[in-house]
Image 1 (cartoon, rainbow, N blue to C red):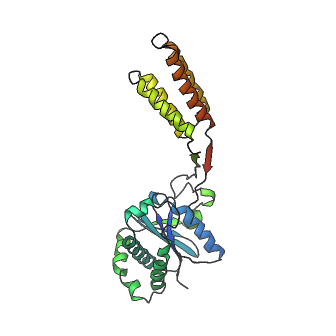
Image 2 (cartoon, one colour):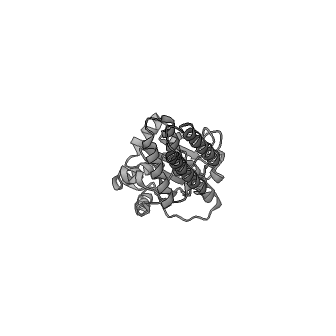
Image 3 (cartoon, rainbow, N blue to C red):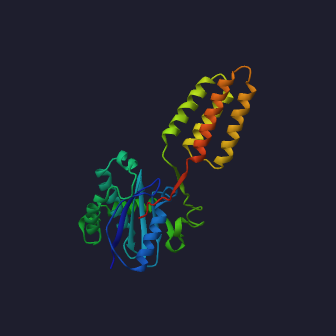
Length: 282
């Protein structure tokens, strides 16, 4: 039977799923195709606006426009023209329901899950080739596909497990890189930042000192590779520069600057990393 099995709307820049049809199929081919759709959605920005990944029994069609892309899993016998008519109708419905600002600000998967009702209604019209609404844009879409054919992919060639994409059609390797988060800033950490800013303000005429305290603030607030080595090297530079200024500064001034640098170094070294793996699957 020719039909549309699954449809979803994703954000093009990162593949975040915004809404999807709640279709449950336990067929192994369908489950495998869903995984491939997930992998493909994360790299849609690499492809033209229309594309088709052909499989033996199932095919994936996608249509991207602006910030969003509509994707569908259809039986391989389902008309490609009809599939793109369906995706175009879905795109218009979604664009009429949500503005660009809300799409860009979405931070969690399926932020517009209520759109599933609309997906189901449109899908019902297009699952049967007899529907008049399904045939409404047939000639126009057929002409567009003739002038600009969709990019053709082989579904079997798409590597998807664990965030890996193939080196062929995808044009490169896709890696899921861990995103690092730091522990929350503590009150003592805030104090060290304020003191660093104060020291930097007192050293506006000395560019080296200003850079030192600015970099300490950066190391505390953001993750950086080899943080420990950089922290100790920076502390050594601060101490050396202040000792060099002995005579221009009294002992109390030097002690204050070194004390602030030491406090900041301690805060940098004790603020731990939290690793969070992205989980925006379809």
